Structures are given as C-alpha cells and as structure tokens.
Length: 144
Ligand SMILES: *[C@@H]1O[C@H](CO)[C@@H](O)[C@H](O)[C@H]1NC(C)=O
Ligand SMILES: *[C@@H]1O[C@H](CO)[C@@H](O)[C@H](O)[C@H]1NC(C)=O
Image (cartoon, rainbow, N blue to C red; front, side, top):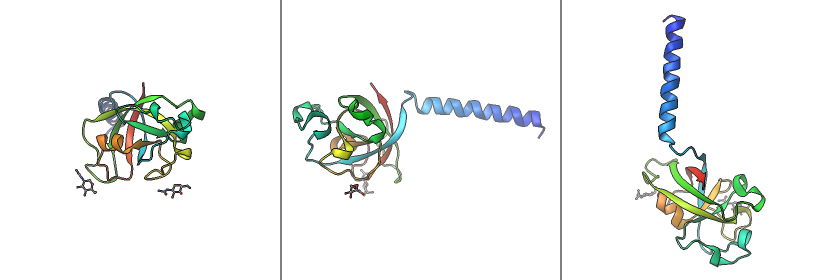
C-alpha cells in the first residue's frame, strides 16, 4: 500500500471511530465507576443526618473523591447509565437513572461494595441499571 492510500485509510478509520464514539455516547457525559451501598442510609456527609433530604424515588448516591468537590456535590443530580462491567450482561440495556448526591463516600455510615469508585449508588439505584449482585460497574454520568 502506498503512503497516500494508507493515509486515506487511516483518516477514514478515524472518521468511523468518531462516528461510532459519537453515537455510542449520545449525551457526552463523563465516564467513571459505581459501587453500591446498603442501608442504613444516613446522609451524614451532606445533610447532617437529615433523611428527609432523600429523593422519594430512592435513587440516590454518595459522591466519591472525584466528584465530591469539597461538599459542593451535595444535592447535585446526575443521569447515570451502566456501560460495562467485568461480567458480561451485567448492565441492563437502555436503562438510565436520575440520582441525587446525598452523602460523601469517605464519611458514609455504610461501606461501599468496593472502595475508590466515582460514586456509590443506593442498592435500588444500582439494581435499576445493573445486576444487583455485581460489585461495581463502569458508568457514564452527566450532571443535570
Ligand atoms: C474500604 O475501606 C474501608 C476503610 O479503609 C475498609 O474498612 C473497607 O473494608 C474497604 N472495603 C472494601 C470492600 O475493600
Ligand atoms: C446476576 O449475576 C449473578 C452472579 O453473576 C448471576 O448468578 C445471575 O444470574 C445474574 N442475574 C441476572 C438477572 O442476570
């Protein structure tokens, strides 16, 4: 193959890559990881333990260090989608959830299923987008 053909081929591949990427991630969120945690849910990191701040949907999360933002994360809402996991078919296809940050992982009363993730979802939130028995998932998330 001549260098010119090779150049054309790689730029076509590049365009295809961009298109695939664009359509796989239509809302251009960030990519991260999510664990889950179980009751008791006490929002000590955000609302001084005042559980009336929980969304009635029970779809909430504790912020990991990456998004905690020195406490500014409290009350922020995100759209979260499961994109992959170690075990195939862990993600529930075409499911996304809207969650509210109600706590800080490092000070949460309940321990997460694994340490070091971007956020830790309530069991109900996690189970809505993935197989609840997974330890963690890769997510796409976008702040509202
Ligand atoms: C996460 O870290 C905490 C505190 O260091 C530790 O007690 C806990 O066992 C860790 N959890 C996991 C799943 O490794
Ligand atoms: C969830 O994962 C567990 C453990 O990998 C598996 O046994 C179970 O069949 C899965 N459930 C669904 C609904 O895929």
